[in-house]
Amino acid sequence: MPTRASNRTITEKDVDSVLHPYTNLKRHPEVGPLVITRGKGVRVYDEAGKDYIEGLAGLWCTSLGWGEERLVEAAARQMRTLPFYHLFSHKTHDVGVELCARLLEMAPVPMSKVFLAGSGSEANDTAIKLIHYRSNALGLPHKKKIIAREKAYHGVTVATASLTGLVNNQRSFDLPIPGVLRAGCPHHYRFARQGESEEDFSSRLAAELEALILAEGPDTVAAFFAEPVMGAGGVIVPPAGYFPKIQAVLDRYDILLVVDEVICGFGRTGKMFGTETFGIRPDMMTLAKGLSSGYAPISALMVNERVYGPVAEESGRIGVFGHGYTYGGHPVSAAVALETLNIYAERDILAHIAKVGPVLQEGLGSFRDHPLVGEARGIGLIGALELVADKTSRAPFPPERTMGAKVVARAQDKGVILRAMGDAIAFAPPLIITEAEIGDMLRRFKAALDEAHGALG
Ligand code: PLP
Image (cartoon, rainbow, N blue to C red; front, side, top):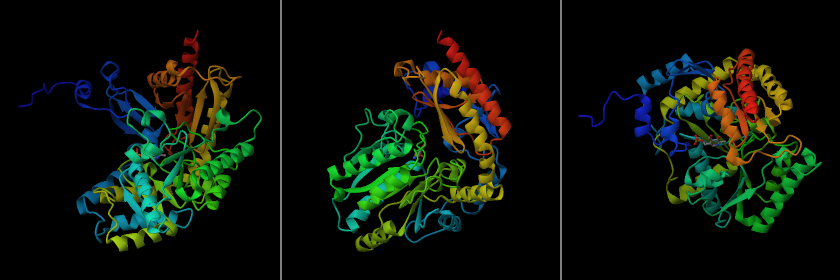
């Protein structure tokens, strides 16, 4: 016999039973959940049938929008044929192999092998482990420190949350773990000095990186992690010249570059990978989200021969590469990912983004005159509006006013779901969004922003 009444509403059951990620748990019973029941195209619907444009593609992942039947069919077919198998201990399966081969063909720089996992965090965590394994293989046991940037987001496992440069991912979790170094955030609007050009700002960040490496001892620093466009840190597009200058420093000290393409991969920045948009030469690349359009959990870590060679040697010496997840390369997820990549190619998703990306960027740009907006930024189909208390001085609102969260709550009332990262409001809609839908999304948002401005009095 169930001990709780079974006719409780979803809201009641939710409050009684769910420990929610990224939620103020204490306030949750009072705020209550928004129950989403279905989706179609760029829209999702709540219990009452109200529609919302999903301005963040769920969690930056649902690139093909909701209701893509081909992905449903790919999953169902694979479920019937081989719902589970793994890649451990010399076993394999066709969809896992095909996916790895396809990703190597698509790789923007020469890559050697692909490791499949279930989430962005797992892919980045694996990259961290490979960095340690490789340094040991090379007889460089002190070369283990990893540099990540302020406002970076690389996941939430113990190690990846330590690379993540956001306070709430570390505070009270007793993180970061040792061995993580912090480099500056490449946000020109916020951190450039008075009159400093983008190129000069990039040069200064590269010089500061070099000073950090020299202070720590170059033979102790193993790798640098970077998202091409920083996502959860506030959609920060790198300033002109940034990556080539950073890469030159890393090359000088034989430091690996891990590019986290979890958000940027598969078209978000206008090219297939952020690596291409910004001219980066990674040694490892992590992919997730758009890899399966969010329809099935899957991620991939690509490594070049500089990484794979020593790792393979070490596993030969030890007898096994002692790492792998039960669901890494899950056949259903792999089948969905392959079909997602087929759809991107057949529908020429990059051509579509080339058409609608400028519409989003111009639309965001039109908010520059709004009294609450300090900066409009973005590239391709990702962007953000940064709210400020004073446009001239760029003074932010005091954090306790939670302006960003308030605007996002009003936007939700108006039928558009967005995400506030501090006072930066992020836009990363499904890649299939049309010009008309972008217009609709921004109109709904403007009504919310105007209302928030009016409420300031
Ligand atoms: N890396 C980046 C750039 C991300 O945006 C995210 C998630 O948002 C992750 C890693 C972590 O991925 P996951 O939530 O699948 O573990």
